[in-house]
Length: 152
Image 1 (cartoon, rainbow, N blue to C red):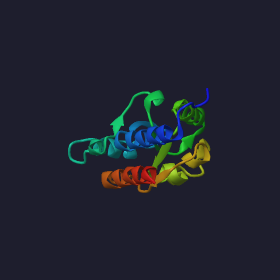
Image 2 (image 1 turned 90 degrees about the vertical axis):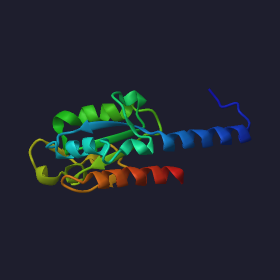
Image 3 (image 1 turned 180 degrees about the horizontal axis):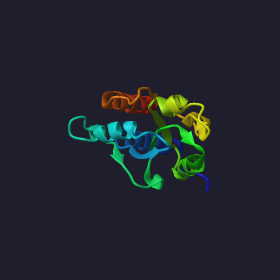
Image 4 (image 1 turned 45 degrees about the horizontal axis):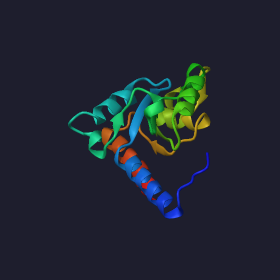
């Protein structure tokens, strides 16, 4: 179906969509084979002490409602297809945040027989948050960088 709105209306609609995307991104978390250190730090970011929700970010249970995929751990052979399926189920535009050294490069598991590699070898990654495990402040900074890039 072709868009039938006049150009000024379409521009205004696009601005509203961008504003909504920046002010209330919904995220889903996926562990692709990590040791759970990064997962604990992600959970710490949504506690009242760090309060990731002040940016409007809400964790979702379904990829069909999520804008941001927060992924931890190296990609194992078992989780490669699941990660790709979750990414494909997310509506466009979609964004990926790779958290931790394992998600970025394979980390301590690099070279293991069942490790495919980093997250970027399976799906495109927008923001990398290094650390083993990264501090909640670093995770929040990475998400804030993603939101800043959406404004541009």
